[in-house]
Amino acid sequence: MRRVRFAPVLGITLTAVLSFALVLSAAQSGHLPIGGKVSAAQAAAQKDAVQWTGTWAASPQRPHGTGFGDVTLRLIIHTTIGGSATRIRLSNAFGTRPVQIGSASVGIEADGAAVEPGTLRPLTFGNGQDGATMQPGGQLTSDGVPEDVPADANLAVSLYLPVYTGPATEHADNSSHQVSYISAPGDHTGDPTSAWFPSRMQTWYFLSGVDVDNPGTSAVVTLGDSITDGTHSTTDTNHRYPNWLADRLEAAGGPYSRLAVLNAGIGGNELLRTSACCHASPSALDRFNTDVLDQPGVKDIVVMLGTNDILGAHQATAPEVIAGLKELITRAHARGVRIFGATIIPSAHYTLAGNETRLAVNRWITTSGAFDGVFDFAAAVADPADPAEMRPSYSSRDHLHPDDTGYHAIADAVNLADLLGQAGSTEVADAASDSGARSCLVQASLRVVTPESGIDATCQATPAARPAAAGTTGIGGKAVPARRKPAVGQDKPVAAIGGKAAQPIGGKAAVSVPAQ
Image (tube, rainbow, N blue to C red; front, side, top):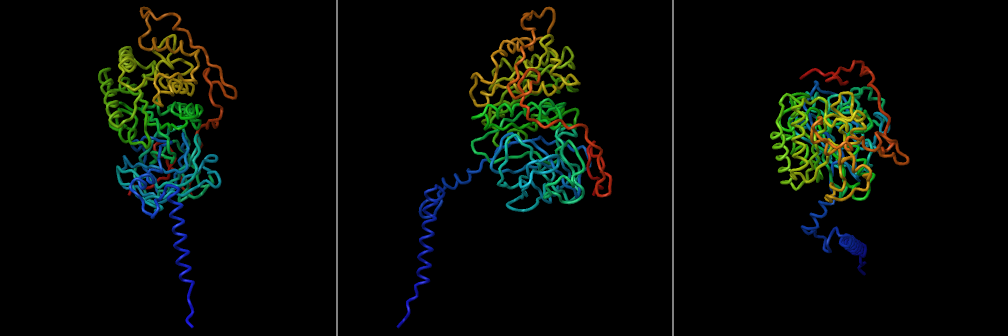
């Protein structure tokens, strides 16, 4: 009698049933239709499931030093929004040779160069490769790594550079106002401790952006010069005006907390021409696409430019600055991006003629209707007694850049509702008591104070101080979140690395490597 063999038949049957169940489950979840075939619409939906939005950015600048070799850079950055995954963007925009990235990692900063236990994750490139190479003038984006990234937090991005890089594309030559670190020789991207990172610097090398996966979010890009970049703000406190703006958005909650803020400021930057100082940075017109319009998730732009065009060697006229601003508006609108104009803040450094040029540009910004909205930064920081200068309590030691308090006042001048496309809405966060004072400052900021100016005496009074909210510290009469890290003092002397003294690179600690 022939024996009937059930096992193969049973196995095939169970496999078929299981496969059908999996397909049915996938179909019910919206991932697959019954039958297991993916429609074009569903494929597109799956591809769009990941939405990258920038949470931090820094505009690339020309190199100032000699470069790096066989060291790990641990670069500290501050997020604005969070997400469920992260990736980094690197730039070799001004490099003269290929830059090899041997390995990379990202984690949440604990203290200094140390990373919070359990958060350090390796980054890969090109679908899983440990490293990659950037060609001169090129860019590089890592693969995404699934790791929850919090909003308003410091991340540590580590890059191992095994081969001499040549002069390194950077941002903020020893003036990023954020301490980062250089390691002893070797690959220390996987080391969560600070033990191998004895040298400190205040420059971001190669790193141009950090993105998060967070559907439904978008980015506000702040375009400007050193005032946007945060010159003279306190190191390691994130008191640049874009940081204060991000804090306001987060505190407002709801749809406001879905807006990231990206800083595209460069010290010495000019709107119209290559800067006559400060590494000869490309003009804002030249870098507008890469630094602003190409940012992941960009929806809004806030631009404050013209200070260096007017004050600097080029001495631009008001019609020239206005023409440049018009071009930015045209290009932003062509990409479907809103753009807001911010008035140029006052300074004692302007000549009488230069200040007249500033005021003429500001009049056009506030009255032309060319922008999608206007934020009067000049009024926010002007001295009521002399609107041609900054209020002393808002000014840093150079009387050109604001201090932390002044940057906070600038951020307060942004109407958050405009960033949601709700122009004209009344913002809850703005105290009603400020409205009259701000109106007076707007009037005063648009003309030079002279005995013949005719400014109403009531408009020369100092605006009423805003009381500090409970649980916060009052800065300049404004409520300021008291949750910042204490300021870091002067950088310590650079320690010896691997038995060799670390050599300065543009005033910063770095390992000296002979040119090749």
